[in-house]
Length: 301
Image (cartoon, rainbow, N blue to C red; front, side, top):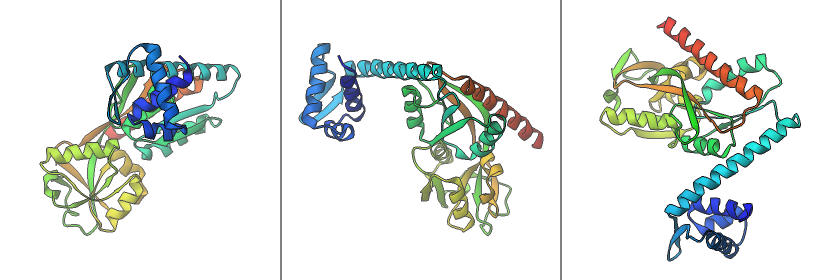
């Protein structure tokens, strides 16, 4: 059993499509098929159910995939530990987020204390972040939806309110609060599907008895706020985003009384990952940063 075989199997198992897997791995499909067949012969069991040209990971394949991914994660952690022994990569922190607006102040404050640290940041969906944690590709993630899985830890940081913003001349611009059902016929400007905030606001609308009509989707909160200000629709905005986003100027923020619209932001990581001293320090810093932010928010209420 060779590492290359396992890498090929991992790709085929995730895609459940031999042609697409061969294209991603940049090898010929017949060669990939033979490699998978030899792996199954070595194991003495089929890993995929095959029907005509379709393949589907079976129960044995799912068990084996879980072990393979854990093995690769261990190898990645071993590489990281060796790198630290050679005094390299000690100042790097990799971070994935679904809520980029919290980063400028958070990272800026941290870097003022640790100026030699270098961050690599990714804007990812929840499913992508989970996979990156499992594979050992990132140190941490900050998300508004809990990240759950074996050996994964998600620590709540702060619970914030979700508001609705409307254009300056909107019929509701003079209101301080509304029931969400009052905007069921409005065009919404929203985050793309797959992001935690979009899933959360979709659920709020369902609780209010409607499916939001999406006029525009994007992944940049500042752009969404600009479109609202120009009168192209209404949008949800989180409390922290509103406080940090100058692009919201000109829009009117309205509190939603029904249903209760809140989200909890948390920090996620893999308990199997090896953390450098600076990465461990960053975790403590994030906890303290949000504890202080929560205290300040409560004082202002």
